[in-house]
Each structure stands twice: as structure tokens, then as C-alpha cells.
Image (cartoon, rainbow, N blue to C red; front, side, top):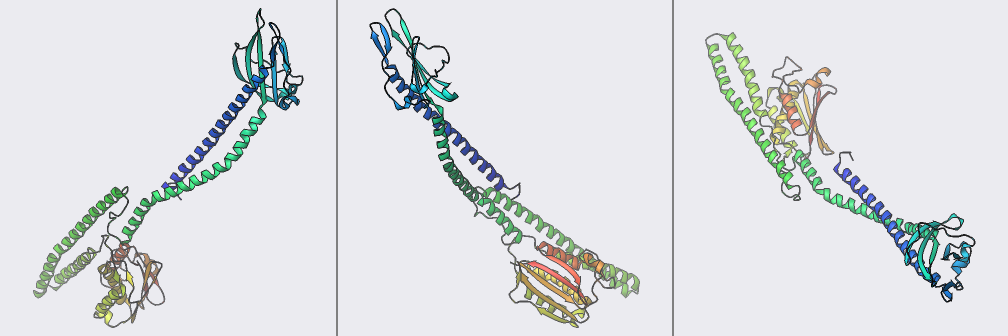
Length: 447
């Protein structure tokens, strides 16, 4: 797809948006899970701090001391990752798991009855999550500050986060794939109206339909309506242009006919040279006018067109057989009876008539017409056994006013008009010398 493709740009933007949203979702969920795990861990540390606080007892009136610590396997194994430390005034008591390590103080002391969560470094320089509680004990004369720290190794929290991320990634990848597939399906369905418009435009160019019509989704109906309005305006302009050309040609026919009449009167009076000169000029101009009249009838609207090739060719050949050039020739026609072309029948008759008339003028004994259909196009082969055309003149045969044989009559417009008709119908016209004579290849689209 081109970089200007709307489908490609929407697909890239949608795909990147989905991937970005999934990445943010994975990051956000991981952070939320980490915070949840830490809250659970802090709640557990807080509950354990109450058990540590219960180790304080009054050993004598107005004197606090330590009672024996309960046996807990988590705190008995050295450097197990679970630690507590109880400070009662200048006296400190630690869990066996701390061994000979003392948990450091971080920050200023807190008022009695408050607590905070800390990050600190424990045994073997491992990061710890700690819950620190400050209390006070009344010994009668004064109060003794109490600091309780319960900590756990952060490695367990990090492992829980890593495990959650490992479980989350496959599901996120599957969800991303489903979202991309769903977006592509939505994009495909959403782009169908534009594809329908493209198909309608192609049908307009090929002549299968005359207008875009109204059987389109509501979102593209305004565009289709504007296209139909533009086509109607253009067809109107073309019709008016053809009518003006026809009116001009008709307007010239009467003065030319009058000139020919004046030439006849001059000849009767004995002024043959002037009469011949006027007749030559008037005859040439009348030929131009008649050809322009025929040229003005080339169909340019978008109504569906269909012409039977054998019917048109047979009609043209029958006319040429009654002319002096065509009567002496052998006409060979090999065309399937059901072969139809997408072109106006009058235009096809005009174009093929000009080509066949040229072949009859230069042939010595035979003119052959063959046709075959393949790949949506029909190839018509028209060949004669005449002298052919100079190789350097092949490209100029369809140029207005060009004549390869200056001795022949005509104004050099027949092949030019044929070329214009074929081009307007979406076909192609080419010439070549194959053996004796000129071969014309005429390609026209099938219905």
C-alpha cells in the first residue's frame, strides 16, 4: 500500500495506539500490584509489631523489662529475611535472625503512638521494608521511649511483582492481538463505502453505469451526489459543444453548395479554369464539413454501450463493395457472430468505416478482417495486400491532415477521426507492415 493510503495510515495509527495502551496498561497494573503487595506486607508487619510490643512487661513497680520472646521459625534462622528489633530506653533486644546486626535509625524520633514505613538496609546489605512504631512506658518518675522495628526482605516483594508480570505478559499479548484483529476488521468494514465509491467510479469510466446512484452508504451519498451533478453538467457541456459544431457545419454546407452552383454556372459560361478552382476548394471544404458532422456524433456520455462487431463490419463491407475501390476486391470476414464491444454502434461504424475505406483504396485484390477476444479486450485485425505505408509514417497516420500517399484523394482526416473515436472508447489503434500491405490492429473493450 502507498504511503498515501488512508487504510495504511489508519492501520498504523490504530495499531500503535493499541500497543501504546497495552504497554501503559501493563505498567499501570504492575505498579498497582506492587502497591497492593506492599500494603499487604505492611499490614502483616504492623500485626507482628503488636506481638513484639507484648514482650514489654513491668518487672517491678514502675520498672519495665523484657519477657521471653516467643519462638517463631521466621525469626530464629540467621539472616532469614524476617527481622524485629525492640528498643526500650537504652536497652535493645533483637530477633535471632539479625544475629549481631543492629537495624539503623532513619530520621528523627516520632511522638509516642505513631508509626511509619521505611526502606532500610539490613544484613548482607539487602534492602528491607520496615514498619517502625514509637511508644512510651511510664516508670513512675518519667517515661521511657520504646522503638519497635519489624522488617522483611524486599526480595520476596520483587519476586511477587516479577511473577505477576510474567503471568500478565502472555495475556496482554493475546489481548493485543485480538484488539488489532478487531480493529483491522472494523477498519475493513468502515472502508467498504470508499471501496464502493471506487468501484462505481471505475464503472463510470468503463461505461457500465451512467451515474453513481443512491444505493451507497449515507456517509458517502453527498460525495456521490456531487459527482453525479458534475457528470450531468459535463454531459450538458459536451452536448452543447457537439450541437454547436453540428450547427456550424450545417451552416457552412449551404454556402458551399451555393459556391458549387456558381462554379457550374461559370463552367456553362466557358470559364472552366475558375470553375475547376472553385469546385476543388468547395469540394475539399465540404468534405471537411461532412467529416466534422460525423465527428460531432461521437458519444461522450456515460450510458451503457454495446455494439455487435459482425453487424457493423458486415454493414461497412456491404457499402464498400458498391464503391469503385471496393467492388474489385475480395473481402474476407472472420468474426464470431456473438462478439460485442463496449462502444456506440455509430462510433464503431465511423471508425471502422474510415479504416476499411483506407484499406480498399490501397489494396490490390484482397482485404481481410479478423477478430478475437481475450482479457477483457477485443482485437480486430484489418489487413490489405497493397503497398503498405512507409515505416517513418506509421506514427503520423492518425495525425490530422497527414497523408502517406499524396496522390490519393482526401484530406487526411479519416484515420485521425478513427483514432479519436477509439481513444474515446478506451481502446488503442496501431499500424504495421506485415508482408504485402498495411495491417491495422484495433483494440476495443468488451462489455
